[in-house]
Image (cartoon, rainbow, N blue to C red; front, side, top):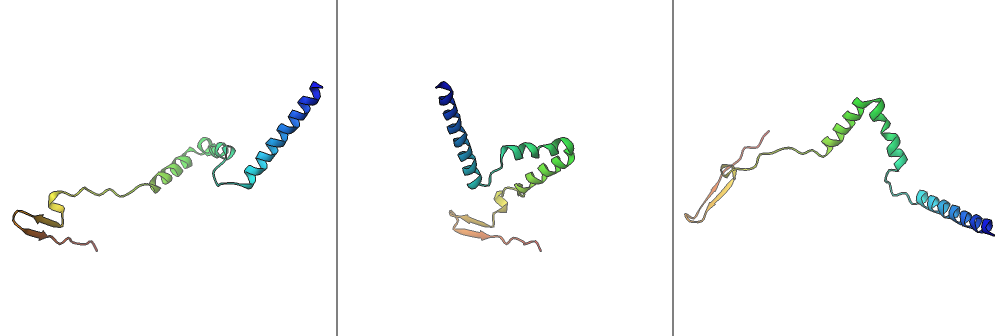
Amino acid sequence: MTLVVFLVAGVLLLGLVVLAGTRLLRHHDGSGSGAADALGSFIDVFDPARARADRDLDSREHQGEVIPSPDDDDRPVTVDLRKGTVRIRRTSTPD
């Protein structure tokens, strides 16, 4: 009787695993799997220069230009409320 209970529980467990696996394969959300990530790290071992170059290119994707913060003299429009004057400075545009 114990053998039958374990056999039925094993078959139910196997059925749940198969159901979950097929559902996972049908509803793929685009995220990488653990096996693909583990196999993708082989490039770090066999070609470390290329792996470093790939990481460098990935980091440059999120890089922006550094611009200086404007000082008081860099503002194109200056308003002096006490004197009642407005000073507009034209900026040169690079060609």
